[in-house]
Amino acid sequence: MAKDKAPRRPRAETPKGFRDYFGADVTERKAMLDAVAEVYHRYGFDPLETSAVETVEALGKFLPDVDRPNDGVFGWQDEDGDWLALRYDLTAPLARVAAQFRNDLPSPYRRYAMGPVWRNEKPGPGRFRQFYQCDADTVGAASVAADAEICAMLSDALEVVGIPRGDYIVRVNNRKVLNGVMEVAGVLDPSDPAKFESERGIVLRAIDKLDRLGEAGVRALLGAGRRDESGDFTKGAGLSDEQAEVVMGFMAAGRETGAATVARLRELVTGSALGAEGVQELETIAALLDAQGYGADRVVVDPSVVRGLGYYTGPVFEAELTFEILDDKGRKRQFGSVAGGGRYDDLVKRFTGQAVPATGVSIGVDRLLAALRAKGRAGQQAQGPVVVTVMDRDRMADYMAMVGELRRAGLRAELYLGNPKNFGNQLKYADARNSPVAVIQGSDEAVRGVVVLKDLVLGAKIAAGASLEEWKSRPAQVEVARGGLVAAVKDMLS
Image (cartoon, rainbow, N blue to C red; front, side, top):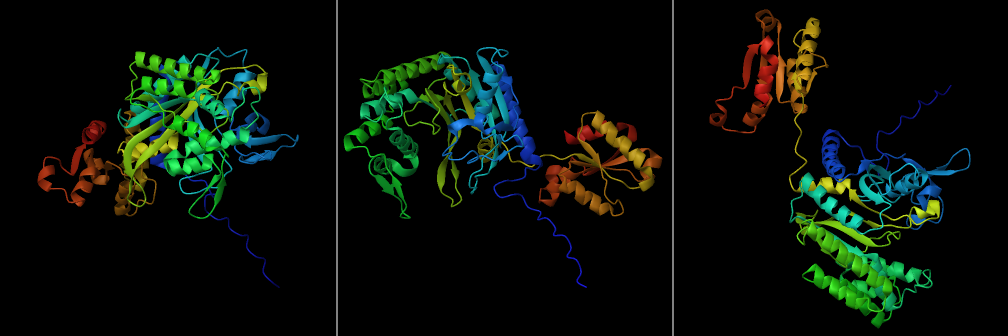
C-alpha cells in the first residue's frame, strides 16, 4: 500500500515584488518620518490615517491605463459585489475623506499622512509593489499661497532630515502654462477639452523624458514617433515642426533668474488666457517664497517639470537631489527626484459635484532614505542593547532584576535567553546584536556583591587593529559594585 504523500511545505520566500524590512530599516525610516512630521506639525498640518482598503470607485480613474476595475491595483470583489482594492496612493483616500467629512473638517483642511501603498505593477530592480509614501496636502484653499507653503515646507523637511542646502532644489512649474503653450501650438481647444487629449498625453510624457532621451528623442516623440535601440517603436504626438518648436521653446524657457524665466514664459503663451493665468500664478508663488527667504538656492521656476498624473490642474513641483552618486557600473550620476506634487482642484469634485481646490506633495520615503544613506546620514549599524549574560541557571531572577534596573534607567537592555551552557556563545550573541556592553556575574561575583562589565566596543576596536596605546586609558573589562551597575554602564556607554 502506497504511503500518503507528506503535505508540501510552503516556500519560505517573500512574494515577487515585495520585501521585508528589518531593524535598522524600520528604525531609520521612523526617525526620518518623525523629523518630517515635526516640520509638518510646525506648519499647522494634522495627521490622518486612512484605511488601507478603498472602493475601486473611490480610487477613481486616475490610475494609469485602467481598462478593468482591478488593473494596476490589488483588487477583489466582496460578497456584496463591490470592488475593493488596496490603496494605490494617499491622495485618493484624502479626496474621499474630504468629501465624506466635509461638514466636520475645518476649511481649509491641512493634513499629512504616512504609510504603505500598493501597486499591482510589474516589479523590477528597485521597483516594488509595496512602498512607503509621506504626503502633505491642503484641501479647500484656492490661493496659490497654499502651493507656496507646500514648497517651503518641503524645503524645510529635506533640510531637517539631513539634505543640506545646495544638495537639493525644489522646481516649480504650472500646468496652466503648459496648457497655454499647447493651446498656442494648436493641440488644446479650450472649448472642447477632450479634443487632442491623446496627443497632449504623448506630449506630457515626452517632456518628462527630456533628461533621459535628450532633445532629439523628445522631438521625435512630438512628431511621428521614436524607435529605440532595441527596435521598439513608440508612437508620437504627430505635431508639425512648427508645433513641436513651440513645445521645445517651452522646455528651453529656463533663464538665470526666476523673473527672466517668467518673462520668457509670458512671451510663449501670448494669446492664451489660461497660459497667462498660469504665468501670473508662478510669479505670485515666487514672490511669496522670496518674502520668506526661499530664494533660487532652494526653490526655482523650471518649465521642464510637468508631473505625469493627469489630475494636476495648476502649479506642480518636484524636489530633486543634485549631488552625485555612483551607479551600479561606477558611473557618476545625480541622485534625482525624491518628492513631487501639485494642485489638483478636480479630485474631490468627483464625490461632491462641487469644485474643491486642493494641493499637496508626496515624498518617496524609500528614495529619500536611500539618499540619506548615500550622504552618510543613515545606514550606519545601530547600537544594540546591553546584554546581561547568564552564568547560573538558578539565579535567573537576579539577572532579570539587573535588566529591569537598566531599563527603568532608560537604557536598552536584554537578558540572554538562549542556552547558557557555553558562555562563549553568549558573547557571540552580544556581538551579533551589536551590543556595547555585556554584564557578567557568576557565583563568585555574587558572593562579593559585584558585577563585571565587558566593553564590547573596545573589544571590537582592538580586534579591528586599533592601537592599544590609543585605548590604554580605557579598560576592556571592569568590576563594579552591584549597587553601582546602572551608573557604571552609563559611564561606559558615554
